[in-house]
Image (cartoon, rainbow, N blue to C red; front, side, top):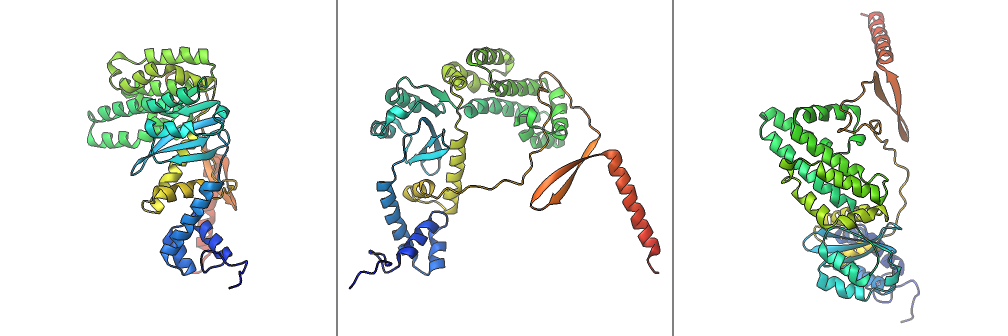
Length: 375
């Protein structure tokens, strides 16, 4: 029969329908797409499979200059590669083992473009970087370094809670995320919830100070200054808490050069961690996609630009007020009123005296309206 340009060559459907299915499969499940277009789910799966095969042949992203390497644990341990300079996903691989990654990086085109590699403390990543990207700095991601300090703090929090009454133990457990948050990111009210615990329990305070010192290490110092502060941070850990911070002490000893490389190449795997969260969301949506579908939905989905968020950041404590230098927060005679003005939300500062005056005026008006109402 005569060829019709608008019809797909492989199936009894229009090209427009095929492209619609391909686009929808990148964000919705096959079953929902099949229900919307009135086709069998196997047909939708077949169309999407053909699409991924075409994209595999055509899609050749440029090798990044700043390469982020991380892993995500689903049914298997997958390896995630990202372009940290341009905040893009570079590739998703079915394994993070050295035997799998070695031939992959051997065949990687334009390896000379890679200037910096950012990874965690998985030894295989660093061995591969030295083999395939010789002379390039390898940076240990600061998130993984600070996390070991947070783990030590959390262990001490749990041990402290075992000595408390049931109600106090629940209260201390509720403050967990406040203790793990940077002090400068806490509001005055949140700081007032944290401060009594630090004053009452010296070990908890020492662990909190260690976490704060290590976090503040990454705030703009050069490498020499960071090296000095890192050594001071390790020396100030009380000897009886060495067991709680055993992992932190070990990774600083074994990876000190890679940790300090951040101060000459300030890149982190924060974007890669965000990609990992997106992968988990995709996997939950499909209740366990195959690797091929998961990879296609991650790599070939159209990039959308988000609008400006209407969420306002909470008020921070004054910079420079650190727990191991100054305890206590300045009391302020203010409250905050939330005023909704579509489509944004703003905050207006008012004193308590103003608030009470307006409240008294409103109560007087309500009382007057009640008296004037007919019996």
